[in-house]
Length: 333
Image (cartoon, rainbow, N blue to C red):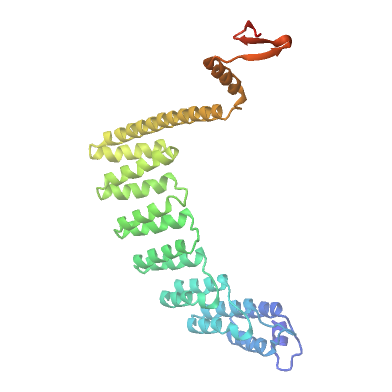
């Protein structure tokens, strides 16, 4: 720790960058030298003179936040975090997540949510992890409605939570008896996530348990129409077993047969429409063929109907008329 003492000494002429100071600051906290760390941080703030000398940066404040939180001085951690703008340092999403998580882990969800609400004022956007931390903590504190709200906000922010986060949400909602809310999130996320068998089984089992068998059949109907491969053999057997308990196992057989018939009828209709389209296209092509192909024939037929023919004047006052391939001569005086 001699280097630390040299750096901290009142008459020390050692000048370090923020990176060097941060390493010493972190070492002091980790070795229980809390007061020395605070003294060093004050020195760093005094020497900070941008752009000539940068002795503090975002990392410096992150180290201070961790040091205060380790000592359970959470208000001080929040204060030092909020003060970084005074030194032209600006928090990012990771630094917010770090403090929010530490507050949540120590039963300070209210303070964590206040910090989260202030992110937009600093021009910082929360990410998936921000919402997951808040959501999980809300469930721990028996606030399922607030957890669901955080999840909705995450979706509305165009963020994409993974399947694991979705599964945690519906699991916790079902545990507190909010099956309908869980089902609404299922409906919302089916188009956005690639559900696996376990995800389907979970929501179906929750619906079966509250006797909403028809809703399960609706889910299956949608699967069979849109992506039948999702309805695996394992999932099919699970559903049959649950329906069998209510003597409704024929419902699944009938549903599958009905959808197969729908698909067959739709395919036949599509083929019929395609054939009509082809016929219409052929007729259109025929109408666009050059008129000359038919015009000469039509003209000849018109002449036949009028009794007309080719007339040629010959020498000596003879006129010769030809009609339909036969030559008739007429001599004119």
